[in-house]
Image 1 (cartoon, helix red, strand yellow):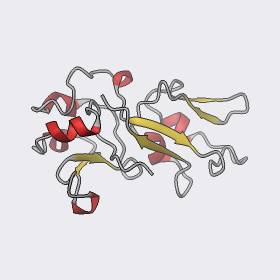
Image 2 (cartoon, helix red, strand yellow):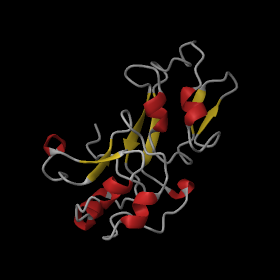
Image 3 (cartoon, rainbow, N blue to C red):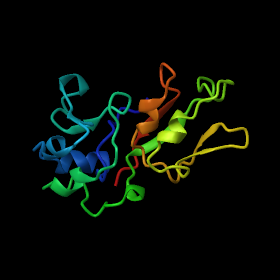
Length: 159
């Protein structure tokens, strides 16, 4: 299991991020969707007070406001376009995906902010994640009607 939390867009690699983040909260305050929250004690002492995202509850909608207010460089302000973001990668569990099990569903495909790029439909109209295009925002995980979600973001690849 990956213990790296999902970080906001433009986040440096985890070790570098932790060294740079001054826990000022500007990214949390500016997020219009309230996707970014402070890591708490239950998230671990090492990351407490740093910005994290719980995609299942509230994903990142890639507004990119957080990268503009980070004073420490923990979030790279050069990352300005959605396609430049690398928060993680969505992984689809075909065994629990409703569409792959015969119930037509397009939730992840229809809601992906990188429409028909990060998630496409195969010839049988089933979702397929393009790992090279996926930015890891978590919208797909948030809208998945399966419980638990059949698609989830694996954090990593920041920068």
